[in-house]
Amino acid sequence: MPASAVPASSTLTAGPSVHLRLRDETFDATNPAAYNLYLLAGPARLHVAVADVERRKFVAVEDYALTAGSVPALAAQHDFLGQRGWNAVRLAVTGRAFTLLPAPLFRPGDEAAALRLHHTPAPTETVRHTTHPAQELVNVFAAEAALADWLASVHGASGRLLHHTSAFLAGIVHQRGAAAPRRLYINPGQQELTLVVWGQHLEYCNVFPCTTAEDVLYYTILVMQELGLDPDQDELTVWGELTPDSAIFSLLRTYVRHVRFGNRPGDVQYSYRLNDVFEYRYFDLFSLHYV
Image (cartoon, rainbow, N blue to C red):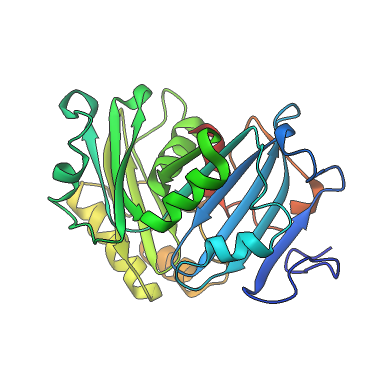
């Protein structure tokens, strides 16, 4: 079945439109305890993945268009998003309202003060943090309070709220070997661009607003120049929602000599239903498996 196809058996008869809906025949939505549920919420899209815990296999991937605040509304119509009893639920939010801190400098309760240097939380937002012990980092971020409340009320202790950069970093770490060279990784997403530079340790992580291919190129070259990476020598790894013939990839290949698409996270399996989905798509969604 083509990756863009939506089966006629879809339970969504109204509301947000479906961009992608792929489910393995072995996925049993009536037994959520056997699965982990991963959600990536942007301003206009919700990405969904389900992983079989015992088999370490992704058995469902779905992608929906959203209007502001409509994750709870979508869940109310959906056959399993609002279902309780999952082994684990991880919900990541996109956006620029985050900051990474060295773990020794962070104290619980200081989240709002730390984030205020970069972002002033709105009255409708809550400020949270995620620890990354292996990197000795803490990710402090803002999220819509209504979304956090929905996660807590529906999924309780099994639910974790994160920033999408936490998943992106975890996925990169999982793929990098100990002797991996210093490299720039980018992920063009929903009107934003995430960039990470990793050498012996994390050197840079930021999210920029992007609406055009030229924006992506500008920030990519800017970061390479600022951090001393050579567009003629150093490799650029790209994930995200683009195609090999897209304007973004064409521009990047014009100005950066060594550009390659990244792979899916390893050490897990993927249903054959995903065979028609580009390997470099949904990387941060799949990488929630490692956070």
